[in-house]
Amino acid sequence: MFDCPLFCVSEFGIVPTLFAAIWAGRWWYALPLIVSISLVYGATRHEHLVPILANAYKSAVWILLFMAMIFVVLWIIGMGL
Amino acid sequence: MIENASHNENDSIEVELKEPVLAALLAWLLPGAGHIYQGRLRKGALFMVCILGTFFFGLILGNGHVVYAAWRPNDYRWQTIPQLGTGIVAFPAIIQNFKTREGGEPFLITGRRYPPGHAKQFELMSPDEYDRFEGISLPDGFMAPPAGELYLNDPDVLAAWTSESRFGFELGTLYTIIAGLLNVLAIYDAFAGPVLPSRSSGSSGGEDPAEDQGNEKGRGGKNPGRRKDDDQSKMDSNPKSKRKKRIS
Image 1 (cartoon, each protein chain N blue to C red):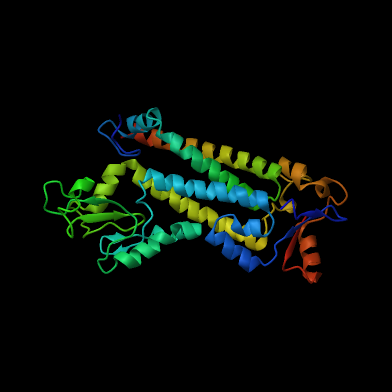
Image 2 (cartoon, rainbow over the protein chains, first blue to last red; image 1 turned 30 degrees about the vertical axis):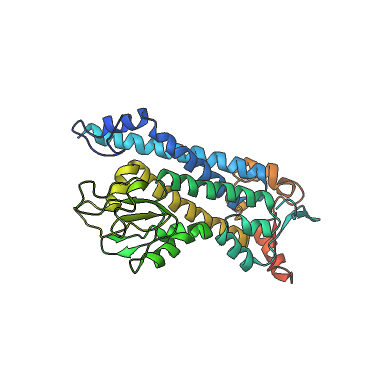
């Protein structure tokens, strides 16, 4: 198992830790949050179920892309460590 | 919502907000309750499932310790403030704070820990040993603050909690905070209705294709140029404008 916290910097840099976190499956903990946030945000923008779901889908994709972008940035930073 | 929403002659939708202040209060006390009071049952159910689900999932991740109220040296628990946005489900934290403030025992004790100085200090003890350490054991209560003194660099009950839950303590704290903040959005929705995307910023059908599906006929059809502002001006002239929100 991986005892290192998600973003701790190990002697091998941050990159192995990020991959270890992904490999260990901890990133799954983000999914319920993304779903919940997207649905609630969508529900505050629309009144009907279909637009709410459509808005939630768009929001979820946007959040995932943003997280992926942050991941790449951390990866690049970690390469220099 | 749909149950109380009705299409008028302009194909707009009226949302019955009833008493917005009361709805907002209910929405704070129990996520989704304000919408259910307004008859917006599906949205109420959606808010309730999402927000309470997030809150309790976080609570489970942190072994029930991530929601507590404390304001003392080495433990300024600011996270309680956003967590209280979830309403009544976070109230036990306040009650436990009052009960334990003067050194009293919390209610709903989930376990007891060895006192400081013992070889197994701060570890959970078996129920058989409760009598042996009566009066000096450290109780873990449901949503109660950590018992005993807290230190920056020495072991204490809070350190034991974080050690036992591992990353779940921080993650659970995050989940419960976000649940409270999401309910703030839900409270606003109960008070003022949904914040629809501005039509002036997008193309004829709006930037969201879904708006055309559900939001519905009035968008592209009879009054393609009509804006939300037009509705607002009509609302202002409507004596019931405080209780209804018309959505085009």
